[in-house]
Image (cartoon, rainbow, N blue to C red; front, top):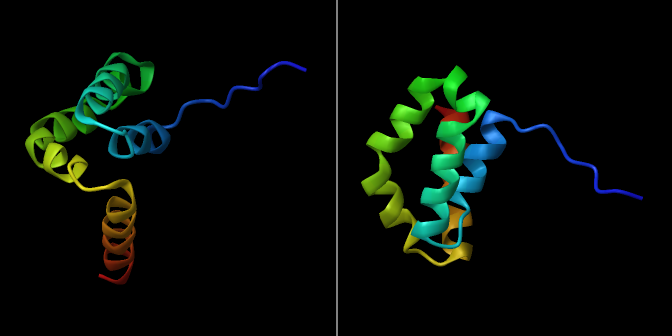
Length: 81
């Protein structure tokens, strides 16, 4: 049985960026998103992430467990806003 690939989504590609193990991996994933069909379709999303890169890099310095708490808490706060 072959590997079944899922279609890429904007949210999935962005999740791959902010859950990357390190800055180099995150940058490669951002570059892949930028070059993808979705990145070309949503250039404003690419711009927002590129403009916020310095803040994202700070976020990547936290251990993965802490990052999960931070982005989960932020999602919950956004939902309740």
